[in-house]
Amino acid sequence: MRQVPRYNGALEFTDIIRDFGMRSGFRLLLLSTLIVLISACASNEPEEVLPEKTYYDNARQAMSAGNFNESEKNLDALETYYPFGRYAEQAQLDLIYARYQNLDLEGARAAADRFVRLNPQSDHADYALYMRGLASYNLDIGLAARYLPIDVSARDAGEQRQAFRDFSELLSRYPESVYAADARQRMIAVRNRSAEFELYAARYYIKREAYVAANNRARYILENYPTSPFVEEAMIILAETFDFLKLKKGSQDAIALLRQNFPKSEAFNSKGEFDANLLKRENRSLSSVVTFGLMGDE
Image (cartoon, rainbow, N blue to C red; front, side, top):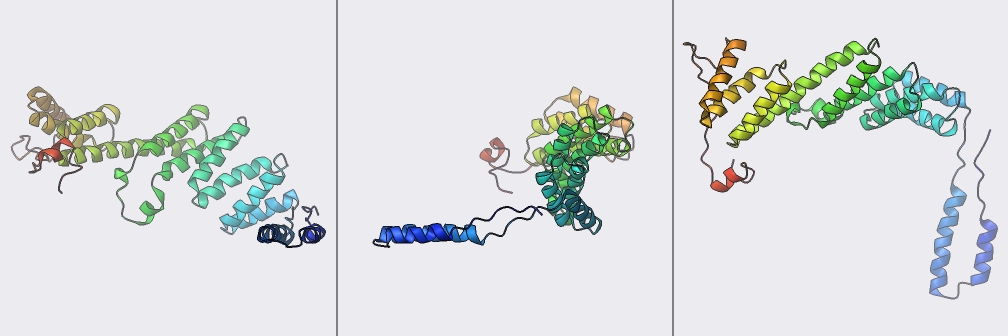
């Protein structure tokens, strides 16, 4: 069994004491520092390097038992000591899974990215791409949103766009992959979540009476996410903001589009007339209007 050699500094320490003789405060300070350093070196236990198969078996057993911390520890050691060994490729795949299950989503994504770079022709590259997308898909949600009632639509959609790119690459390279169907569904979910984020922003701008910005967000939803479940509300916002901005043609077109696609929308009253009321005016200071309400009173 290989071991890292230990450092024995006893002889050197004795010689230092004899030479200096502890004649001054400076020498005493220097000796104290050396004592601490040498003692630390002498007290470190040697790191035992296990056989490659032992690390792999330990990692698999820990993973089966749900102990992903222990599994990750053994897989890291396997990669460190046997980077080109018999279990190297499988260990890299297992490390992706262990980190994901351990809620280390950044680490899982990094491990997946590394696998794709090192093994571009692997039969399991589709799995790595799928896991990379899955990590990105969940990364912006975080632990708090998993267990607390936090509005996910208020979060930044940057990680969602990365997940969409990862899943797109998977479908482009491996359209027949066993992970392709789930990736397609998650891409739809990503688009819907992105549309929801835009709608959240539009509502925020309405609250701050920034109607041009709200109008832009609503139009962005219609142009980029026409199949999302948030199109109806986007059309209503579009119609109302156009009307408020005295752009009658735009408002009429938006109402006609809403009527054509959502004839039973609650925005129409019992007579079939457009009667939405999303724009509620607030009495606020000029500085509040200028700063989009960021400095105004709630």
